[in-house]
Length: 180
Image 1 (cartoon, rainbow, N blue to C red):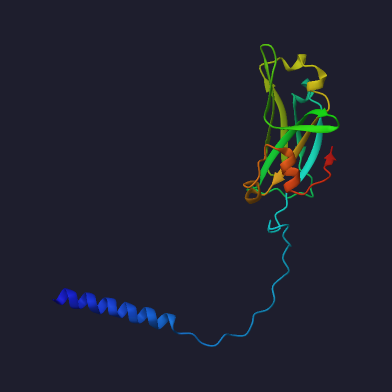
Image 2: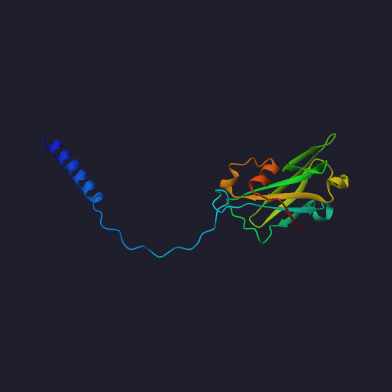
């Protein structure tokens, strides 16, 4: 019986204390100072706006078939951002055909890979594969055009980043700036 009495007193005390704390409400205090203006969002993106830029690269033995491109100083790249790169593979009736990297090309018995990696400051494009890179036709090494999309992670989750046109449309980018 003593156990039940202790349990009952404990539960009753908790209820009284719980109701007592939630029912203590006084008049509202004075309003605080106004906050700073925030960045306006773009169609619900909460101010998270992605960026796209373009670079043209020549690959050769002198640069070890790789090139490092610094992100433009006007673009802030955060660790949580998604960085996706594309290579221009063809132009069909005036329409650019962009393929996401890595891009693998197959030859008779060899493979060529266009790849990339990045930091928060730059992106490195490189050629790799089983083919002798020194024997490649200049069409595969000279003036290769890449586009880089830097997309906030929350925004990228709703995109098919494999389709460059979808990324351009979602980010509302109409003209891409080429950097050297």
